[in-house]
Figure 1 (cartoon, rainbow, N blue to C red):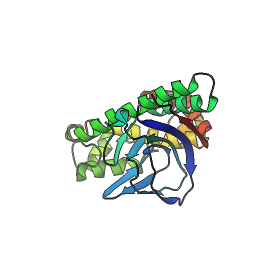
Figure 2: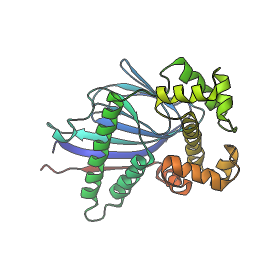
Figure 3: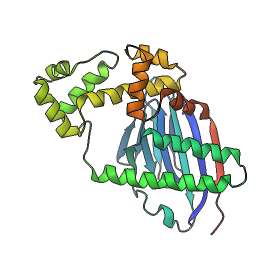
Figure 4: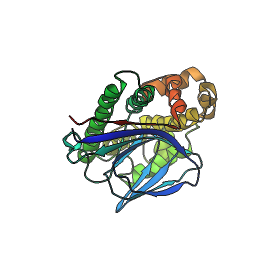
Length: 269
């Protein structure tokens, strides 16, 4: 099979955290809350909630918490043996891509199996881990071959920055267009042409990134809705579910796995 053992961790790094690492394993790390920066040779990644980055084994890299809140994450370390055909398709260079909630929910299931250790759980965990690695291969390949999104041009950068400055305000499309000195129709068509998504959808996704952090910090659905300027918790929950695919209450399950770590050894087959 080519894998010797797998380690899964859900952790939290404090504000000001900075560390240089060099792992004898493939590193697959997904950010749940907070922001960070990863530097690996000439590759530099700014990571936000929902981002997943991969570092090939034995390559040194630096991690820094760049935000004002703890950096919360899940990480899978895949230790390879002499030959690892099942991970041969993983990126050969550091890479970053965006993952949906199902990706992180999948990780919860993996940690649960690895920590419970009932009969057969190691084999189930191995299957879940391999499925995660397979998703990484597909997402990384899609990122490598697909169109770049946010940040492709000064226009998109300007619009996205304005959105982030007004995440808690009701920002109509006309106001966004006016900020970029365009008519609403011209703004919408150009924004979608350059990013592949509508400006209001990107705004909703940016707001849900903040919502993820607040929920993981222990805020209730009502408190999160109020802080982000929603009229009520029902409207917030509806938008959150549309963007993330699950209700806020289910997403908060992630906060209960912080500090969990487990390793399984894989027999030679």
